[in-house]
Amino acid sequence: MPPDRRQASDRMRIAEGLEMLELTLGHGEQTMMIHPVALYDAEGWVLIDTGMPGSEGAIRALAGQAGIPAHPLRAVILTHQDIDHIGGLPGFLDSEPAPFDVYAHEDDRSAIDGRAPMIKFGPERRSALLASLPDALRIPFERVFVHPSRPNVTRVLQDGETLPFGGGLTVIHTPGHTPGHVSLYHQASKTLIAGDAMVAESGELYGPRPAMTPQLEQAYASVNKLKAYDIEQVVCYHGGLVRGDVNARIAKLSDRS
Image (tube, rainbow, N blue to C red; front, side, top):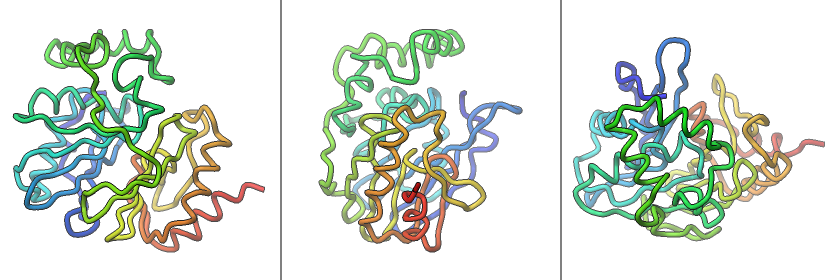
């Protein structure tokens, strides 16, 4: 689903230098909202997840509306291999004047590099998507994911490492939704960027969606892993921001007995 630019105007400042973007994809009844996250300072900005093919322009517009300076894109961090998280990457690779690092976990790297199929996006779905895209989007997508000339991932994420963004961003390997799914903990604001490890609806926090999570028990084990962190707020890619008693909510989710 390409971005509906008419609805690409919402965003939320989570903390100083940390912005949640709200982007509605699709048109009419076929829509969904996603929540990429941007970290920024005087030197540049970092984007966590890139939306569907064609999302690059709308994400840049949202970043500008949020007051993020038009500095270089320092890095893209991909929480996992799903198409609604990596699909916008070709647009950023094409439009950014200087190279930037692309971070992902080793267990999803082959799919993101185009060397293995995405586990939830097989050849038929990929062909249908490509047929629906105009040449301006299809050609970069094919070059990056179908016939890649070089690896897309330049930096491999390690469980427990701290990335030098936003004053410290801790990588938490949270497999289950995909093998290489990661969540990210922003230490300064005690914010968990959950990717699809959890979802939110009307301000309530829920576990991973069973229909989209091949290894559901492993995914709930990953939720249990999050209890080790002092979390005051969560950004779910699907559902947005959740605040208030977050650690207690996560503990309740992880207790499936």
